[in-house]
Image 1: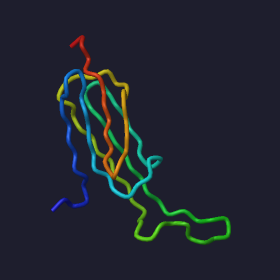
Image 2: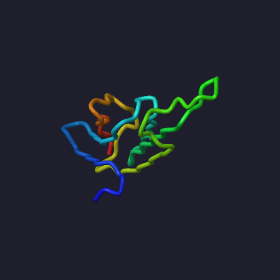
Image 3: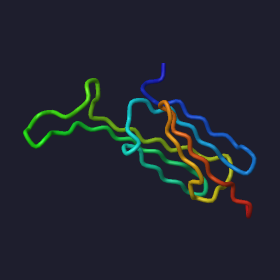
Length: 101
């Protein structure tokens, strides 16, 4: 049982650290990232909206909800995203390892 928490994978791949988070049914604009040298934070918010005419503009099955996850990284990184994509409900973020550590 997952209790609504996403699947997360953090791996070292050569000179990079790769974080993969399974986040279904969100728009890329709903995803916020924060990267520090030793941790990675992802925040996702989905909210109902109301149109100018007062009608509900939410998608069926969506709920007002948010998720925040903080993952400790296996090594120090340079806190800059080198590559990021969100495909088929999986967010993948790549960061360079800090060679000075």
